[in-house]
Length: 366
Image (cartoon, rainbow, N blue to C red; front, top):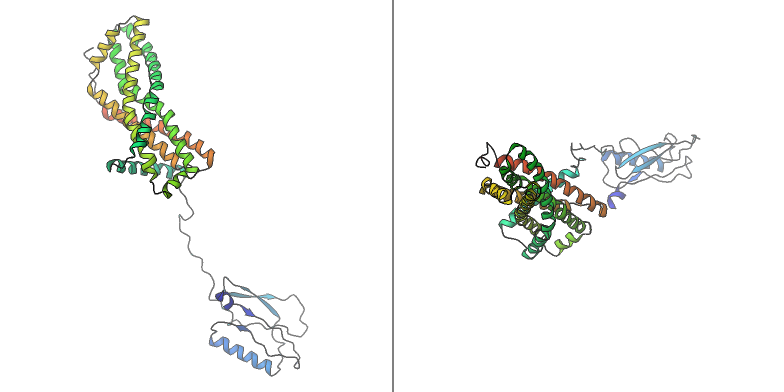
């Protein structure tokens, strides 16, 4: 307030007649320079002696308090020979305080796209979860609840899906292999296709649609309703309480679901081959036993764990970064499932390329 007042100036109107002349001055509070004091002193002396002030131009001034500048406004009235206001000389007006435009940084107005920082948040969340697992900071009660949800409650839909997929593949394999006289190779081919690719991928797709969407919807709703902020206020880390149990449950349950789906798919295929095409179940199972290797089962479990990590981390990350109320929750759920499926297919290609290079010899003993 004092700074603003210190830069205001007061203008007094004077008349040209001597008998009514009054002592006045252009006053400006502050620390005027020596030239300003000299001008004001001359002005007051001339007024006291009654000298004519007609040569002063009739002017008005306005003051911009933010920039500390005074500008004259031309008078639209005609000059009748009587000076009505005193104009300040140029050395009184302070022009040294003109604002200087500061250079604008190159990326000051740029903001990263939303999908970019959401993708980075997934990687950050993955690192946080891994550090908490290594430090054994796991909420076991929530982990067991999520494990029951991901594992036993998903067995039915996984078995049903794998059974029909197995029977569909059996129809195709039996038709083609029968023409070539390779009925004994049907079981081995089905076993390798199921354990290496079909069972891990199909199980992960089912879990992504059923569990991943639930993770994203739950955490997204908690985010938009500020429940996650409430956990922070209560000195509870949301990553420890919400994310880590879901990630651990998904990585533990997916390998067992994969093995269950493999067994269900092989049984349905064997029964279909015997009932429709007349190929004995014993031939199918013996062929599958000769074709399988321990590494095939291990690779399937590794794939399932990676797929479980992708599903849980992407779903939780998209839930944590949800914006926009109920509409944002729906969009986050949809995009989380889609990105989880894309991540599953990409990871399946990379892992298959790393695990199964070169020429295979699994079918040479059939």
